Amino acid sequence: MTKITVDIEYIKDQLKKIGYEISDCIPRENNGLNWQLKFSNSGASVTIYDSNNVKNTVVNGRVDEEEKKILKQIIDDIKAKEFVVDPLNEEIISLIRSRKEDYYYDFKREFHKKDEDLLFDIICLSNNLENRDAYLIIGVTDDFEVIGIDEVCKSNNILDLMNNKKFAGDFKPEIEIKNIYYKYKKLMVIKCKATKHVPYYLVERYRGVKDNTIYTRVGDTNTPKDKSATYNEIEKLWRIHFDREYE
Image (cartoon, rainbow, N blue to C red; front, side, top):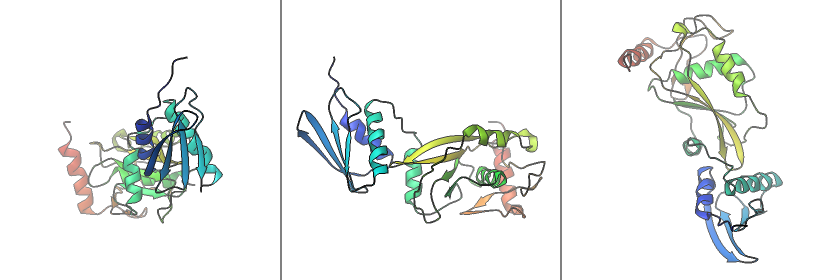
């Protein structure tokens, strides 16, 4: 069997991209070459072996059993090139560490219990006044604690929700569902893409989300459901629309 050489720098880079801050990487010769990793933001101590067995990572240290189990799985999968970090991962981690919300991203502790609330958040973020990609980040509390998600919300359910609603001009917010990691915890991110079709608004009311009403998001606050964006905000969105009309 051909000897596999573990790319420790690649493993470190992938761990950094999901939020682990590596404080030490110590090479050792003990039953073959291995490396011991320690972190400044986790009590985990990880031993990675340079061997053909890619599933033999050992995780110890002052962390709970859940982190030990999931971190081992992540590193084993990185070694086997079976774990792919989404290109968006680092940006989402940066937003979480900013410890604030803004016009183009919003944190939610858990999945929306009502479809109308999810629809409303997507419309507000998609109509942000800077016309940039926006993110609905699920698995983070109002105090910016990352708790992750336990249940799996199928992306098809969210896409079906959007596709079944009647929007002006039949232009619907363009969204993409992302699986993101913050250390060993999994988050869901709904990316609302910046397009030339703003402002998005319903032509048929859906429960508390009114028809023929333009909503947006200013700072960390959505337009109230029972109100409309201001005249100046609506004008800005239409100006974006017409400035980009011939793209």
